[in-house]
Image (cartoon, rainbow, N blue to C red; front, top):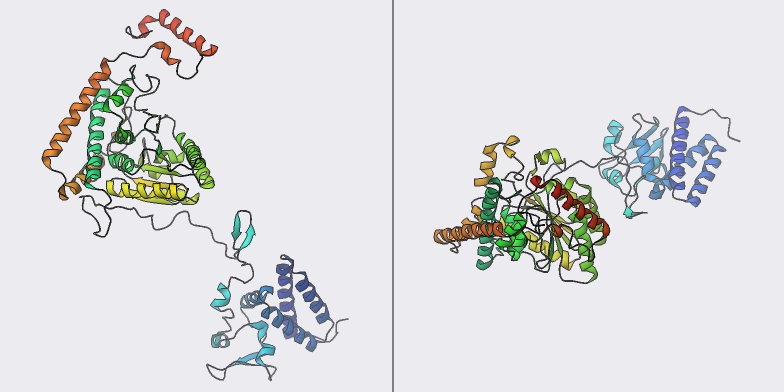
Length: 546
């Protein structure tokens, strides 16, 4: 039975503190099935209750030494509990220092004891503690990964994770934005003489000529729509570098799934101006025979999958195609283009996660042009653009100046090599600005300033930047510039005129090219359309071939 001898305040505090430490240590130890430690601690606790107050004090101190020496079993836990008490728990306990380098000696009620035997719960003592009764824990103790509540490499579903007692939420975004890679400044000067300029003269001039051609094509096709000759059109003004420089960095074996602002990739691969015009006019020799809206290009021969209007649908498809290339061990990858607005679609997130988990060789290229029709990026998401979204899914990502053709070329080429050699996805965020209206159905001056548009059109023009660079290299002249633009204008005008002369597709073509044998439901639909035309002839073109 416990002794009935009256206890001093010192004993009461010591007993309570020791019991508190021991109970907490039991909870900690038992959670990790340290049964032998738990049994030993309980035995010591029971024995201490049956001792005199002197024996109890010695037992508590010895238990403290044991717990302290066995750091996994609560040494730092004891220190943390003690340091949380603002008042001295042992008014009769004193520590003295003979010198700054000597070890402390201890005394209880005036009797000196050895430092090892009575070191209070194994804590270290400093002059500052002697003066202010504080700092029991050292920085080493507090940061020790083996302390209570901190255990490294705990096996959990998905891998090993370290635990911590610090409740800390990850910030929504970093204070410093992800930097943007570039090679040329706005005036076409290399930013650093140490940067490798990967483009040869032949390649640089072909990229530049393609950018001018795309720009010229957009101008004339846009005007054709305004004249009522086309039903719809969409330009790539301000984004020519992303189109041509990325195309130059790819192989013709790479499969491209575009959105609708990447016709420059097709132009680079050999899609003719006449083919562009035929598709937009929807004539009988056009790619889609009028079944698709204008600018929904495609070419099986050029590995360019036909564009579909709904946003993001091409992204999961791109991952599936990339995985197919991986299974067949092809020396190629899939490249998927999309805009910043697409990242708000569920298919975008599904595709990134799908690609990361399957290690698919796909390169995602986001054209962050600042606007999703009339919704600007500040209203689209709170993250630091799109580049950080890749990191969230475990995908290597990079941000590049989309108006710098050399930078885009370097990044896409490197991304392609990584995707193929390491069989993994890559995300590229190309920073640019949509100089044009979203499409011929949009008037962007209703939601943004004309001055801002003009600023990006002139100061940040990707065409002007690359031209300045090739001219300083001695590869281009004003004469060659005039000849290129005159030739391109003539080519575009001729293509438009020829496309208008071609016959429209037959009505029957609306139902063909899907099934080898036309199913009954499509036959019924064709019959219904023909009957409708006969009943309401004024609602349909007179020259429409039936």
